[in-house]
Length: 114
Length: 115
Image 1 (cartoon, chains in turn orange, yellow):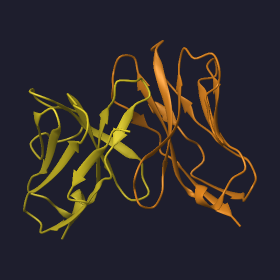
Image 2: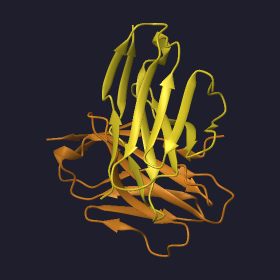
Image 3: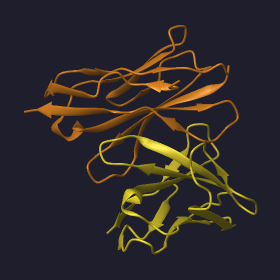
């Protein structure tokens, strides 16, 4: 069974609009961490935002916020005021328990339209 | 922030040959490093966990004899693709965890093409 599910293979959004990228996860651990990464065409992995399972408030980093709904096991990424440079592949990822390894979802390709 | 480098950034080799990819932590020590493989338009798939001074831990379905991992020092892990075949052509990325829960530093990746 997939541990990280991203149901949107691709999305097209008009510039300056907000966009929500969906992510659900599956774990039996009480302690875990959730990540979002951006991967442009160059291939580099760019860290965007992190949410720990015990964090009570949703994480925010500039234009990025993570809508963490623990009971639903969902960790959606919200990008406000999208820009052309936001066009890239976006991966949701999880680290479980005391493990350091990170497991990735299949990703969502985001296209920002001018 | 912490930096992880990979060398080479791209490599083309002939089928049947072996290729070594290096992953270095430049300004911190990494007792653990992770190797991922990414096929075009797909996600990063974890291949193995590289442990300094001990054997690597491979994920299910990854051939340990084909993908040799060595982590001889606290700043260097190497992945050797032995007897490479065209189906091994992929983007290989390494990463190393930092001290914070959110810290995971990725290398820039190595694009391998086997002809």
